[in-house]
Image (cartoon, rainbow, N blue to C red):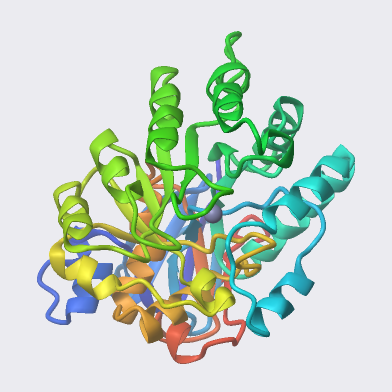
Length: 402
Ligand SMILES: [Zn+2]
């Protein structure tokens, strides 16, 4: 029989469980379903009991966290972890005043194509370890630095070794060899590449398809091209995600809401009709904000407050990538969201766990029967994530060693 572990010494447990939140007076406690002086029992990687430590049942083993807050592991629902090379020089140029327009992606594509499998695999595994060390227990990974049939498949296979939440982003940018034939590239993405990704023989390599919809950038895709990509993905049963409204206003958000995408990401430049569309799409389409990008490109931040007040679902993710945001730190993203996006600390934690999970079709509560995907803080409360920016207080909670 599988042994059980009782975890104690938790001054504050974030459960994301509305049942635990019901009746709480503090809005943050209500939203996060906080239990004070809590304990939980984990058996076989599944939560078997949650409640006040004073009522905890006996278990085979016991772990005392000594006054550390516990919360659901962060869900980083938007990353580009499969790449080689770095673009620190481009970052330095940008900080010296050169604007970002998506052109630098080409250099990462060249470096990624040139990297052998084992090099890419080692880089991805190192990045996953870096995420876990900062409290992220679930990660979505996109392709999009291969941009040939072979290289896109290779990147997705390597991503799939570390997560089931993979996204086909052949429509990241138009690669240089197709600069004079955009139509031909969209046909390649929606035809042979998609067929191979969707796996005619049952070997599906991605759960989602994504497109960088940014009509103002000659490297990315306009509304009609994005629609073609998303509709093709939907026809073969993939879920939809969209990079939209990052560099300027555009059709990305409306398109995502119209097609029932699971997530539309960035949402930096929104007009009133975009906000209304996202509010109306609540429960279906999550607005995923990526403030690390605005930090790293020195751009105006999205307005989370406006979206939340309108009733939209708002998630947070890192967008970890070598060009516009090379951070893997969800605590940093949470701190930015609180300081720059108008979110409360509780809203930011909820967005980085429950809402991000929903955009991947997951339930990220700490409740009986749920997977024990947990993060622990070297601090008594989730408030410290934004209160102590840059301090490495979060990590994934490893109970197997107990
Ligand atoms: Zn991205």
